[in-house]
Image 1 (cartoon, rainbow, N blue to C red):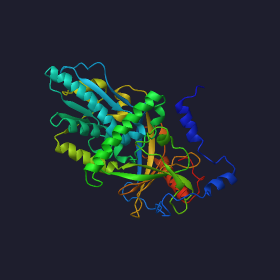
Image 2: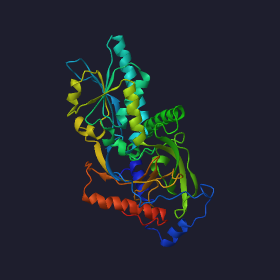
Image 3: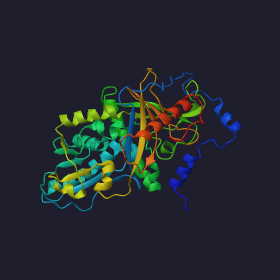
Image 4: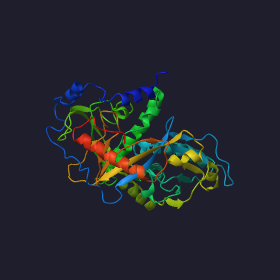
Length: 406
C-alpha cells in the first residue's frame, strides 16, 4: 500500500490512544509534573448535568468532500435564454466551513473581479446570485458587498431561516477539522494554508474594527492532551495558529501534561444573524427558491452564479465526492464567567470528544457518522448524546482511558 499523507494522519490519530499500553506507563504519563499552563490557576469545569433548557440536543450534517473543497470558476459559461452565465463553485468544506468561510469568500471575490472587468469591457452589467444561506453563502455575499457597494446581489436558498442551517448549529472552532486530510501534497497544503491565512486576516480585521463580540468572534485558549493534533500541527501554518505551549492542564482533576493552542471561537449563533442584518441593510436581497439541478441555475436572471450549496451540491452537481458526515452536539448552560476556553484534544484512546465554552453556552461533541445524511433525531441518537456527555465527564474527572465510541 503506498504511503500517503492521509494514511500518515489517520495512523497518527489512531496511535494517540494509550489504552493498549501497560497500565504502569499510562499512570506515569498521568502523573507527569509539568509547569501549569495557567500559572497555578484552576479553570472551572463544566456542569455536565446542566443542559440548556431549549433544544439541548442537536444533529448536523457536515458537507465533506473527498479531494478537498470545490472552489473554482467553471471554464465554460452556462447557456441561457438570458445570456451566458458564469458559475463559481464554493462547497465541500466539511467540518471547517466556519473556519474557511471568509478565506474562500475572498477567492470568490477574485474570480468575480476577473469576470466583472471583462463584462465592463463588453458593456455588460454584472449581477450576482449566491445559492445557499449557510455561512459559506453569507460570507460570500458579505465580501462581495464590501468590494462592490452597488453590485446587484441576491441570495437564493430553499431555507431562509438561518437557524435551520447546518452552519447555525456548528460549534465554531477555528481549525481545519476533518478537511485537512484531503490536502496531501505540498502544493495542496499550500492551497489550504492560503485559505486559512485569508480567513485569519479577515477575522482579525473584523475583530479589531467592531465592538467586542459584535460578530461572535473571540480569541481563546484551546487545551488538548499531550499528543499530536493533525489539524493544527500538520495543516495550519504557525502564522495562523502559533506553536502550542506544553504544560500541566489547568483543571481540578484533568491536570496532567497537555498542550495549549491559541485560536478563535466563532459563534455562529451570533455571527450568522449579524451577517444577515448587515446584508439586508446593504440592499442584498433574499429569495426563497429550491434548485433541483445545475440546469435550474440557467433560469436565473443574474449572470454570475456562486454555488454555495454545501451538501446539496452532491445532487445538484452530481458530485459523488461529497459525503455526509453526521455529527451530534449537546448544549449546556454556562455556570462561571471563567468558562471561556476550548478543550478539543479528544480522549487518549482516539475517541472524539470536545468541549467549547462559547459566549452564551457550552457545546459538547462529537461524532462522525460517515454517509448518514439524516438531520432527524431518532431513538438511537439519545444513547449517543448520553455517551458524549459520559465521555466528557470521564475526561474532566481525569479518567482519560474511559471514553467509549459515541
